[in-house]
Image (tube, rainbow, N blue to C red):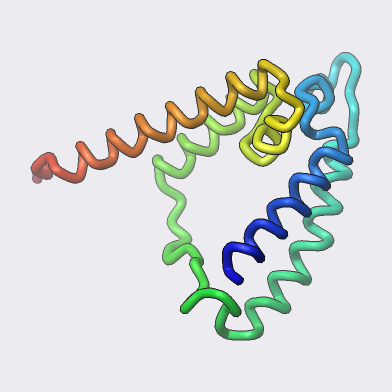
Length: 144
């Protein structure tokens, strides 16, 4: 049931991304083009997502336990550190250059557009490199 619910949620999310046009990198890049052909539709999609997610989180978290898992997977810290800021900046730069974020690129794979395939391949490679670097850093002795 857990796998089925994840699949259903992913299909709903992917359909929303596709219907809103956010699988088209040109549409996303036009949002960032304030001096040119600015397209505010991305802001409207984000506002719609927040309007659904905010009350949804309140309802789900009020249950005290998830339905298909032993516990909620929530951040255990509110610390804003260099790793968080650098990762956020890297995400934003990549989004601004490519016009894709992971949430839009995965549904775009269904279109078989070469740029979506290249983006997801590069994303996967980046995740593997980051995972390897994290494991390497965990094994190296900490200097005091």
